[in-house]
Length: 514
Image (cartoon, rainbow, N blue to C red; front, side):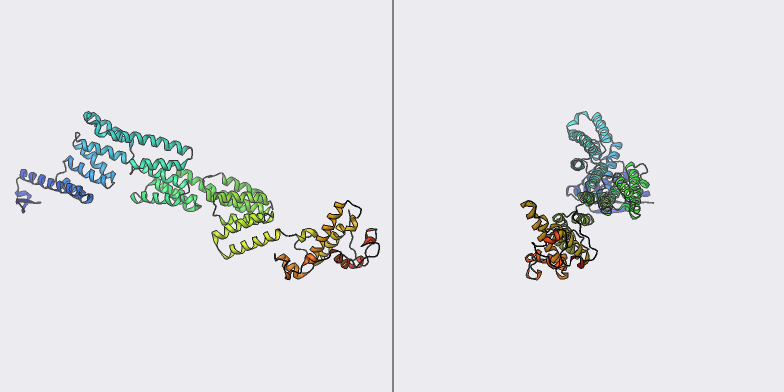
């Protein structure tokens, strides 16, 4: 048995059991209570306190559930707090109760537009026109919005097909101004943000959609896409599989799962081939992996870096530089690609390029290791600008003292001025210059202290460097070969004999003048 409070006088209420009240009186009481609740809701609506307005409109509906206007009022309040789903439900209810309730029909159209359901909006608009043809000016703007949104949708589809993702984001921003609750527009915008590499914005947009609906397949797909493009392949695959559990017909998620699996598998096979020394097979697999998902910049940057590692192993430094450059183009913060390109530049003796890369690396990392790498690059640059004594003597940088002596003998005899005494003046000048450089080279590389300073890139022209440029190459030659007889410096040697002591200095050493 229920009870009801009846106002018997201004400010005076009395409680009755419903069984003791005339049904007509009870209906009157309910109507009055409902109207009071509605009026209170209207007051809160005017004060822009829409949540309280909704509360009192709900009270009115509970008291009098067959009143179309009450649903229409609550729909208006829901629209003001952007709850277009509930607003649409109330609007539809109000029109079902009263097909001639114009405000309810108009709000229904506005809700459909806000939710991006243009087909339903057009149908509702035509229905409203047929029932109220004399009020066309009141819903002209809704007709304009529907047509405008259709144009924006068509433009977005064209831009998407052209992979102009920046333009799609712009178009969807315009569409969301008219349809702020459209999940499809929000999803398309978020997807394009991910395709543009704006992962934080894309994840923020998808998280907002998931807060409204944790099973939003489109939002879950965008989160997976962000993880995929940030090279978190395992987590990305898990998100795509979750999308398919929510929506088994989600075509993009199904394709993404396939791409992730194929990319992981091909990359791992390439790594295994590289480790096994199968360099050509590794190159083939890494290049195949690059074709799987061209939009996945970070993963593809790593693949290019892997290709560079193969070329470095093959000592093909030109191709390795190209691969590192391709990796950096995709990910300009990829430290490993810079490190590998530095090695390649140094092998190619492009030391200024190596220093530039080392400076960029140090700015990115600012670590002890990057500082040392920059220091070494600068030393090698400095060394590259001075005479290469190892190259002058035609010996390797790892040559021991015996190998340096043998190299000096061969170079000194080859470039000695007496050997070129019958040549042109230009040939004589060139030989004299080369003979002097050979002497300089031997003076440094035969002295352990000077050699150490030279190998460390230190300046040998300072007082500690021994002033090697003042060395007399002829004196070094005489000292090394033990002196020569008359007839001009070392003429005896170049007439077919050997300088005194030359054979004794290195038994079995054969001179070649071919």
